[in-house]
Length: 379
Length: 221
Image 1 (cartoon, chains in turn red, cyan):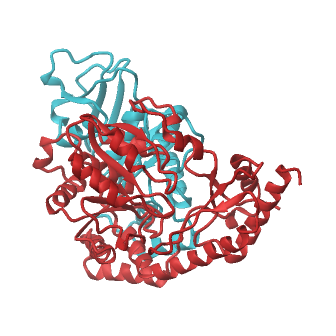
Image 2: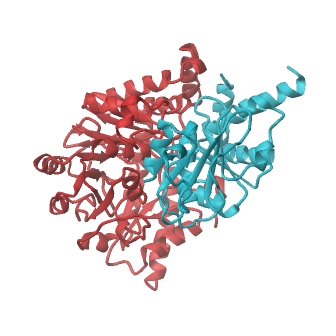
Image 3: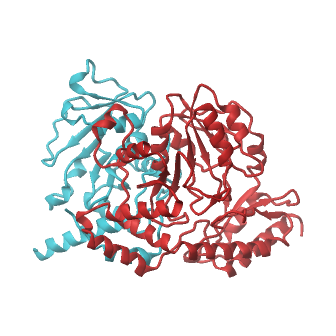
């Protein structure tokens, strides 16, 4: 049975904050001057995000994409390459292009599926301008090891933490580490600000440069660095949604945890597929549901995605294809083999999740998975 | 200042339950603008500067190195946008030869709409930006349809973004694909993508403002 599109299950969070809470923030904005005082709610959001992340500073942007570009533009050394994982968000190489650099792809760690510290260390050279480390969508990358390598080689590091809003890493809140950590407020992420991004940092001077990067008027300081400015102010209406979502984040996480528990319970008896587990020793959002097709599965990952989509359940091939296998019209670099990336690229799937998913929907999804896997194995 | 009914916009977004970009409000605004200006394609982009980046990439040809403008249009803003796209920005009076085939031209049209572009544009890519609050000059809406495309127009309200007008379906589709995967009609290969997305809040604000303007014109208020 194909579902109506309005009930389409998605891999996005799409959290819907309480209407009166959003309107309450709109009223607050109006009381502070409204249209004649743009930025008033955004300033409040920045303050609240600092408290939430235990961060010293927070700078809001119109999007997470341009937050990343800004951080790389302002942090990278005068060297041509930025080291990034290949097994990641499909447009990360484009981020590096806009930062005026060449992406240098490296392998991931087989345990975390995050950028491999060993691969990063091997790739560092005089050409390295920065490291762009990405937290995977389940759990975190090895922040300590990566920061150590960056420190030892005196190379700046930026963390793409767009899927790690609520996470801790070794007990410390993501957003409270040194340097620059970038988050997203896109509706698909944990906090739905419709669209938006922000940077957490402890570096006062860097934060001042970030603010100049995104301000409406190009400042004289920016003239020294062509390409170091693009207006990227977040609208206050987006901040109203984000503030309401931040107020309700515990409800949001509880919902996601229930969905994750339902998947855990159902998938443990299905042969050929294994749920990627959240590290519950850390704080986590339980937001993304990722599963791996094991060697016992005779059904391909892409065939399973197709079956789920056919049944009105949006599933996606996880980080596929890997970036180093795509074709680009701008220069990229991948001199080394990436065996781990190659071996995991066709095995992982993102399953439906998020606010619109109900616990009962998990059974429907798993029924389709079970049927698809048994059919392909001749059952 | 262009204001809008913020409560009405929030209610509309929550009623639609469409929170990502290029949803029903953005589609309605694109349809309204393309009909209004009499062009085949209106592509909404997050800001005027992003519209410039998106159009430069969408119209990009192999070997382009310079973004050429009239000396009075040279600005730090243009310099930054050119640098982000890997283009050197040159004002005409500073150049010995200003009509290399690989040049891309930028021209600005001020509120008067008078266009006295000094350089030749035959065979060149020309990107034109209307630097005025065009909505204040109603009922002259529609006059821009005769200008070369792509045409960048600012949109009203704080953070209201911008619209790119194209007659060519192919050019418009490339621009949509450069902007992001949201709102595309079909995937096409482009040099690079960015995030030039247009949110439902932006669309709701602009629609609310323009609808209120229309009602004011109709009732003579």
